[in-house]
Length: 76
Ligand SMILES: [Zn+2]
Image (cartoon, rainbow, N blue to C red; front, top):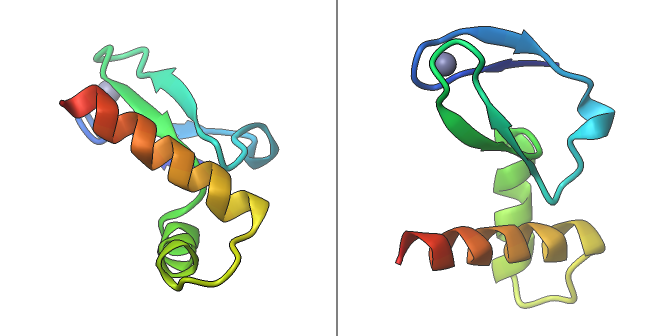
């Protein structure tokens, strides 16, 4: 898959199998902007639905929720 640095728009080719749903922290080698890589935005939408649906959630949604919580903690 192709990812794009949100800051300088540099595109990188990444092996999607390495990303996992828990996300990995990556740093753009061009502008040094740091960001979290995880599943695609479409998948994120699905995971959000699953997380807030009240049903038993999958391991994938569970790990994604943990990632969100970790980011919320960092932002405080
Ligand atoms: Zn960049």
